[in-house]
Each structure stands twice: as C-alpha cells, then as structure tokens.
Image (cartoon, rainbow, N blue to C red):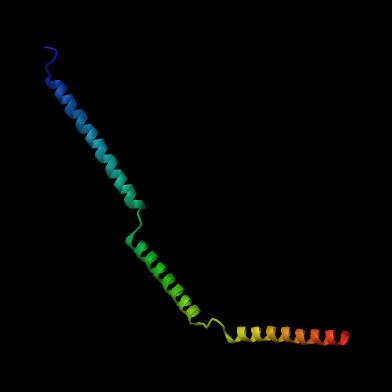
Length: 102
C-alpha cells in the first residue's frame, strides 16, 4: 500500500532529525562561546564601578565646597560698594556741574 510507512523512511527521518538537532546544538554552543569571549569580565565591571564611585565622590565633594561658600563673599561686597561709590561720586559731580552752569 502507498500509505504505509516503510522502515527505511522512518530511519531516514530519524537520522535527519538527529542531524538537525546536532547542527542546532552546535550553533547554540558556538554562540555561547562567542558571547563568553566578548563578555565583560567581572574584574573589568568592578573596576568600572569603582571608577564611577570615585568620580561620584569627587563630584559630591565639589558640590559641598560650593554649597559652603557664602552667596556674597567679601570680594563681591567690595565690588558692589565700589560701584555704588562711583555712582554716588558721578551724581555729586553732575550736581556740581549743573549748579555751576546756571
């Protein structure tokens, strides 16, 4: 009969399935091996994390220094007083010129 499965056909299908399975497993194995070669090692990851932590601590220290500084330091007050004195002197001088022009 034409619909009967022959023993040779079963053997061929089983052999083909085993070959496909072997190829699939070999491909997965090579992908895993390649990934392991390209992966970052634990030591490299730890060094990167430690570098990031050191940068964070340095940045935190700089921010603390900036926050500790007063908003208006002595130099800024001196500059503001100098500008105010200059405007006051200019106003007095302009007043004297206007009085003398009459």
